[in-house]
Image (cartoon, chains in turn red, cyan):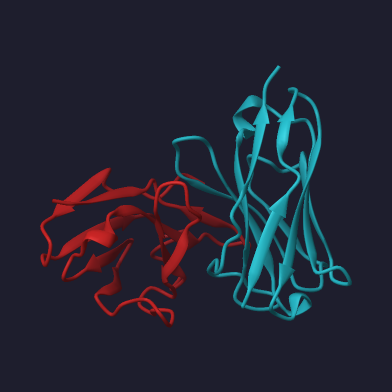
Length: 110
Length: 121
């Protein structure tokens, strides 16, 4: 499968909101409600931030939220904080027990 | 606390083989599907393979199908990835991660710290 499409980078000032898009196809994002989002700081392992499109694991701040419309999923970070500066990846179930990740987005806090 | 610890990475020549291990603790290993995800240097994440909790069902990305084999030993709480016919493009940090349930993965949480595989002559 081809990787899901994400913007290369997004930025915002502390306290602002940023939204990262994740565009796929009818065979992945649009076809299933199994989109997840991961945060990765440099040199660290990824961390689950959102699962099943909108669900937030315990311990993840409620300023992280997820949504989906058609073949595009989105991650919104409200009230941006310095520690949110990281790479973010979306991932979708793609059928036949396979998964596809997004291209990744670097979030910069100005 | 759930912990995953990968090992077995290293330098291997093109065409060679390597077996990665992922030691799990802090949860009932046999009741969860597991997965491998890799990340080439400076690049994004790529799903590689997944296996059901009982080990009877295994799944692969097209890029590794026929060359890689995933397995698990539930008596040892350990996940494996046997990598054969390695290519330069397999160079990456390999992460293991826990799935959602026995048969389904759906998301990856948590992740191990990763082990680096370098394929080069």
